[in-house]
Length: 271
Image 1 (cartoon, rainbow, N blue to C red):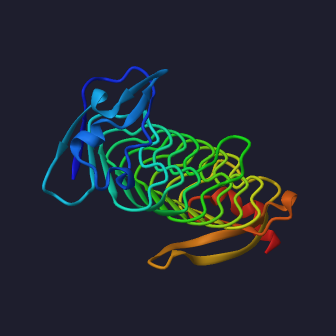
Image 2: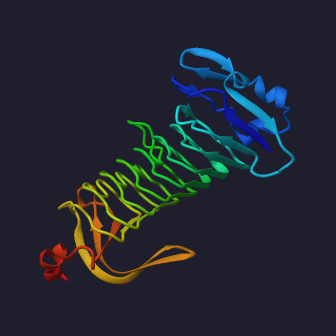
């Protein structure tokens, strides 16, 4: 196992996609230290900004001890192995991830898990905006894998989702699941406005309350429970809404009936 410890508090963004089990594999500490990174507009070596140590432990493959909230693209495109970050992580962590596992024992920056294909990301804190979402103007959303967030997530999470599972144990910001076409998002607490805007498929489950429902969703039924994945079922009852009808969508919103009493007088008469 390789242990990385920041040599200082970072003041400028650092692009370090080389922090990747696939890149580190088979390299000595000296070879890893010579890998190139960018600190702001200056090219440096990984050993210039991190203390790098090797241990006899086999897993995780890479452990990072300290605040790396300014370090971007950790684990980008990784296919195998495991990274543990004991601190906050920067933007684009796990971007285009195709396998393996990343554990963040802190908060995660924007675009974590962007365009993810496979693997697992566990965030034991909050996640910033654009979790599992592509860059603005792109439609290449998350296609597979699983992301679990213990805290809250920011706006536009799960945008253009095409597959996989996002589990949020806290609350979600606005535009959750924007333009999603497949996959599952489960929010254990509350969801903000514009939930499922422009979605055409997939499902969003909210076990808490919702700020509002867009008028382009229609009520379909009430279900006692809903399947999240092969190992978990959320207990309801849930109002089931279909939409987004503005996109001729077939997506489903499962909204807790018990925590959204305001919806009953509006929608139940149509069942």
